[in-house]
Structures are given as C-alpha cells and as structure tokens.
Amino acid sequence: MNKTMAYISRCLPQRLLTGFAGALARRKLGCFTRWLIKRFIAVHSVNMTEAVETDIRQFSTFNEFFTRQLKPGLRPFDAQTNVMISPADGACGEVGYIRHRQLLQAKGRYYSLSALLADKQHIVEKFHGGGFMTVYLSPKDYHRVHMPVSGKLVSMTFVPGKLFSVAPIIMQQVDAVFAQNERVICLFETAVGQVAVILVGAMIVGSMSMVWHGEVRSPERKVTHWDYSDQEVCFNKGDEIGQFQLGSTVIVLTQKEVINSLMLNVGDSVLMGQSIASVHPMKT
Image (tube, rainbow, N blue to C red):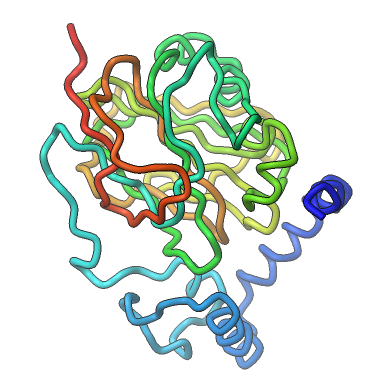
C-alpha cells in the first residue's frame, strides 16, 4: 500500500493541483469558504480554542483560517541562551547529527546536505557535523514559523523544485524529498553560530511567506538569493518569521559542536517554543 501511495504521488500533476488549491484558498467564496473551513476543522480535529479568532465567520478566505494566530502566552518558552526551541507545532520527523554530509529523512533513507542547501558549498561546510531536526506540520497544526534562537538574518535562498507530499508514508518511500522539493533557506547569525531554518514546500502548499519579504517566489523558477548581511534584520527567540499557506515541514540546522544534548525523539509531538536542545556558544 505504501509503495502504491508513493507511485501515485510521483504521477500526480503536483504543480497543477497545488496551483488550484492555492487559488481556491486565496479566494473569498462566502458560504463555500465557511463550509470548507467547518469541514476541515471536523475532519482534522483542529483545536480552535487556541486561536485568537474562534469564529469561522470572521475568516474571509481559507488562508486566513489556515494561518490563524494563537492567543498570546499559549506557547511559553525557556528564554535562556543555552536552550534552543522548536520553531513550529508538529511532530518530530527526525532528529540527530549530520554524518558524512548526510541527513536522515526516514528509517534507512538519507539525503545530501549539499543538495538540501542548493550546492552552496560555503554554507554546506558550516553545517557538516552539526545537528538537525525536522518538524512535520500536519493539517491540524498551527502553521506559523518562529525563531529557535535569537539571531540576525544573513541571507535567504529560494530553491524551486518538486512538490512531493511530506506525509510520513511518502517520507518512507521516496528518496531525498526535502532535497527535491521547493524550499526557502534562511540563514541566521546567532550566539551559537550560524543556524539555518528551512521551510520546505509540498503538494497543496500554496506558498511560503516570510515576515521581512512576503510571499517568496521566483517567476523564472530558478534559485534566487537575497543577501541581508549589511542590514539589521534581527529577531528574538520565539519571534514569528514566516508561515505556510497549507502545511509542510521545517528543518533546523546547527553548526558542529554546538549541541550539548537533544531533548526529543523521533515521533514526539512538539509545540512551538518547546525546548528541543541544550546548546552552547561557538568556540572562537
């Protein structure tokens, strides 16, 4: 059954379906939008009590509902600089260390750090031997992404690609999904060295948006890079940095010898702000 699902995923017109879903999610369709939201909440058991806006009639589009804000104070976190927190709600897909420039996608399946980072070797070398964590956001989850540590934005790179589903069943059957799928790579300078926060697109994900840029796209469908090293675009731990228009995955990378200990295991449910690792400043 799993192999059949993977085969179907490969054959589906990923971009066409995603474009249709994105267009539908952005449109103000009145009663149909409210019906769609109501059905989505019922099917996926969405906890609306956490949202700032609990009345679905106040959402004019499906995207407004999907990117809903949480009530203040619902995701407390440890503010100490030696603790890294989860950037999103979801489930821990994999967590560990980057060995031989390879990351674990799922049991027995690895993918290349170089491919994930669009073959930018000066960045690849920074994270070789470092730590990584992937958070899978299911449809029911809160879909905004936050800073795992305080830091200054160095660069952002948009990498066009495929739009495979990132559901666990696909992760176990299709190689290098995260290195094939469309993604936004954000690099930050922090007290614990450089940290990468990578938003990975997927089938039916309408778009990815960053707070300093808005929706991230490349009309020419090519790798596009933005350099912020000469600007002071700074965020505190826990600050919102972006959002998904429908769900996907966030990957966090740290440099070598930064992590003292990991605080979660594969398959664990995780909330934004939850402590995920004990870290220490980079040696100078």
